[in-house]
Length: 180
Image (tube, rainbow, N blue to C red; front, side, top):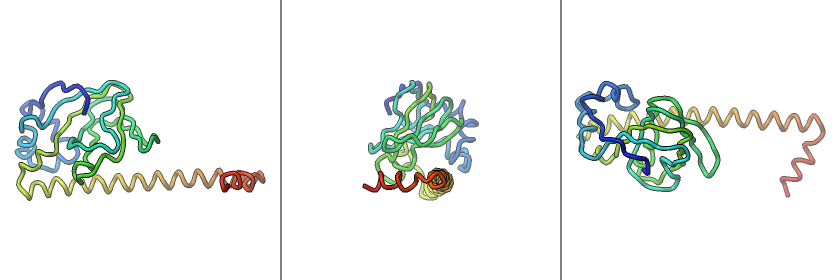
């Protein structure tokens, strides 16, 4: 979390905006207010182009909502996706599952995010934590569906290249090069 902390979230001014974010919109307003009122647990943060918001294989307890800018998501050095939709939630899965980060997220442009330290969830009652986690799981399932769609599209594209090489009589030569 090397971004510049601009300010703590002023819940009184920001509650209606926060209530539009994924996960938060399903929670009661008083619960969202309590989460963001906890001292030191939420900040407005800025990242400059090239600055990492999240580093693959590192541990931390922060998740974010994108307010402005574009972020490159990469895994093992492979660029997978650009996040640029206002309100996009990211960075929640590692902390929720107590695992290291599974990807790196790097600012492509100047980025403004709301960051939330998920340790604040320990202050909620069990029913509220369960509700929060259920919504995160719903979002994760949606992301897995999108990733499967991307994988199918990539496999179709590869199959198209393979078919093209076969029609040109080049497939056996190409295939043998990578077999060795």
